[in-house]
Length: 237
Image (cartoon, rainbow, N blue to C red; front, side, top):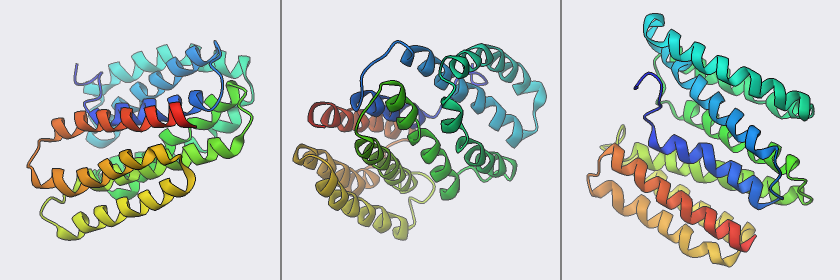
């Protein structure tokens, strides 16, 4: 199953949150269902493809790539026929995925630029969801895209202070400084109700790296923080 199901717990939050942001800023429509299935299958397809690129193990990852490609194709074709304008939303994903392929090929997937490319890819999902939901205020969509991108970039920095860079004080203090900047951004563009969540994110960047938690626990905690952020957006935007 490790060949078929991604084991990155935090990535599931990145998959879902921008989609939910787009829904919160617009109206739920029935095409959102096949759109989400397309988005999910695209993520599931990309995981073994990147692993294949990294390990050169076609014997191990060929079957999941073929399986997910076969499942993805009819959904993708249907969405492009039903909503042809979606093609414009997919174009930015191509160069971003090429960056991910490059870092997989060079076996440097933990590079911060690779993380940011993936974060931008996930965060861009706000826009097609908003478009299909016939949202009216595109400024709100842009703000939610920025919130998603800034939040997950801060998460990437914070996670590095727990795993790859846990002995590097520069990353630790950079993570704290970044979350302070996030509070300033949030207080400017988000409802005041977001302040406790932003403060909690800063506290977790300060405290959790000192607790020696495992990567799995870290990923599960992020799902909780992501849910908190979404609930604030849902009830206050």
